Length: 182
Image (cartoon, rainbow, N blue to C red; front, side):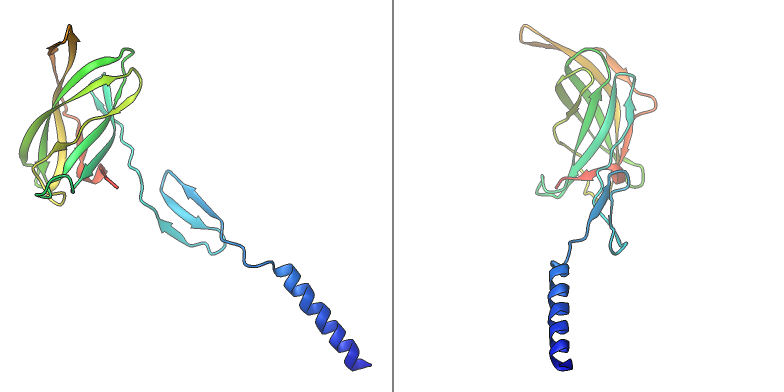
């Protein structure tokens, strides 16, 4: 009798354990955007995730650099191409804005300069510039600085360059503040 009772109890216990298990539950994760870390609640482990760097670099009173990105695959030479996301802080759409920038190496020496334009910058919105070359490899690029900008007009198909607004201090984006293009 004891033997039959033991078998029955063993069978009931085995069935109850398998019914309660239901398989392993996947670990839940929480992502914090501010510091770009991911925590696993069950293990307490923390792993670094790639962070999107958000900037707040004023360009005079009219605009702000909110993000910067570089691409080292654009040129066969491996030079870093950079583009900026610029917010129009004015209450009007800017038809065309011209920028003059300089690239600096890690020693702080000015290496190159280039001009670029941004069209149709909506009031209160951010717009990406096109890529512009820095003449430096990513490992040598220290920063880019904007020397001046012009708010231009286009009338009857003709482009009219506005007055140059020289910036002092010059807005600077350090290489470490740039996101790598994915």
